[in-house]
Length: 413
Image (tube, rainbow, N blue to C red):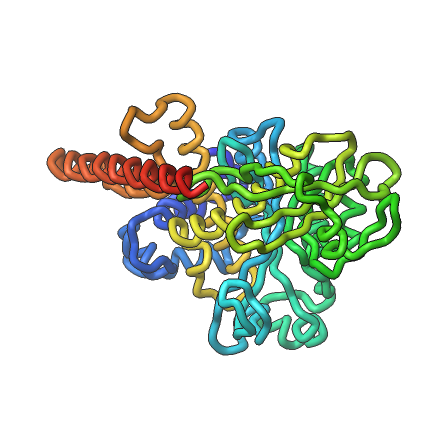
């Protein structure tokens, strides 16, 4: 909170934002201005609502502080930026950006609100560092609707999800930060303009592409699924894309050299095959310098970190529980929820470095840290001891469960 204190000119919102973030981390069944205000001991939710709607502070400036905080504590040579969108199912059509559209959260077309996020991931941890609300043309072409949602019609312009991703990446680089790689799903991997922006900054990428994508090889032009069928049986390597909940995520992998599409660097087609189902995934890869296959596999596996980030930020910090209609409150709620989750990710990384887990216990997770952080400091010693005993029991049980899953996975392999 000291990092962002200077963004609040008055003492009242400065104190209240601290309560708000702690409320987002509290053990509440539902998080909104009403429940957080009650938890904070305030007589009404008016102060919390004022903080989101009318108080004078810049959510984008707090976002910049959040980005610096994450990079300072989680940054490293193996940093990967992950872009993806997530949707929140909503009712009605008055809330900013809500309309019937496809959302991966529901897996179908629903009345929803979609936003694009940028996640910073390293072996130490991962957290969201930027966000942009996706506004469909039905909104940008309707000035009155924008005005009711708190948007200035003269400043609103339609931007695709890939354009929003490019803007967030540009902000990350403009902030003086670097990352070795960028990864994303087919929505972003199929956009040449976005790939060109990434390559221009000398950053590598491993982007998923559809099976219908055509690529240029020294032997000619092929669809990627046709190219996969030309790989000989001995051309596959079994590699892990990272540790999962039930063991290493092992797949068959191969890489095919492509004709470079950028002025400097190497391009490859990375292919992943599920050893059980035979399901195949394709990735278009670029690197400023040649890299071995395991390096590409590591980056491809990092893409799943954004799903873990969404799940943790929603479950632990209320990222998707905002009950606001206008753009400014949405921007402020999401930024503070990202900050709350980043705090958990940083504490987790610091705990793993300074206090390695004892034998028979899993290392502290963000979920466990949130449980312990939510314990009132003034609780009787008996209650604190009770919560700590339960924390140790959970970590022992989870360690045994993980060991069983890993053994079963190893035996199956």
